[in-house]
Image (tube, rainbow, N blue to C red; front, side, top):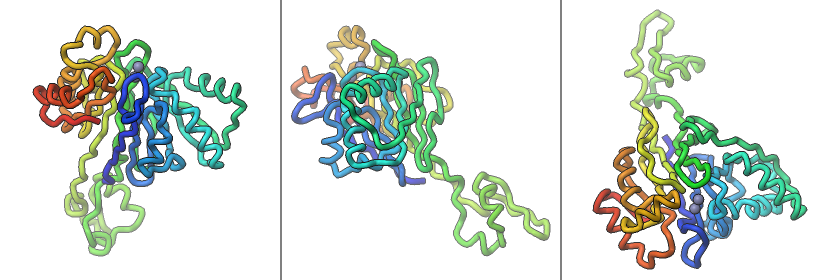
Length: 297
Ligand SMILES: [Zn+2]
Ligand SMILES: [Zn+2]
């Protein structure tokens, strides 16, 4: 299974600063690229990190707050200037389509590529909202001041990998390969059954990445979903500002750590940290008391 790669483009809450842009995460595996949130300054950070906006297949927007969204019209405009023709899928609240249409109308901008919109479901977790060749995208409703959804991105399964040399050894016809990769046994021309375990290796587990911001800590992770290898979680406030977190629909670092335990995450990245904390290292240490494998996004 292809490795999942994530690049943090912005992790600041509310507004961009010289050292940290607003929310955005670039995820890629194989030939597919997904951008989650697109705060102001996202396209500059894509350039700085040597990534390619032109190759993005899907942009996922968590909610309509500006610090997650204001970079999107500019990014799409730049893609049009670059004469992009490849279609782009947008996942987001239904207002997203109108927001972009009005922005482009009043600024007389014209896109050179088709946009397709997928509306978020704020009532329940949804799997396979978009399936690409190498990546698939699921959504989870969040708890925020306005409707918001988090995203889980994982590698698309290519089926069980065949063991070396089995095609020649057992004279497996091309048409049978797909069913064997799906776990079926193979029956040869003489009627002899070759068990699947002789033909395939165990599949590597997917390593899902979950991106949950902006949100109060959720009480549970969707049942039956593979736990995230990497969890990016809202950590706007320190533990002592719990009341503020609750009031604004955000999480403290301890709330983020608690949810990392709830969902059995392997590793937690604190994101959307408020600029009110001059020393983010203090917040990191606070989170580590509850969840050791924590890092700053
Ligand atoms: Zn925000
Ligand atoms: Zn927000």
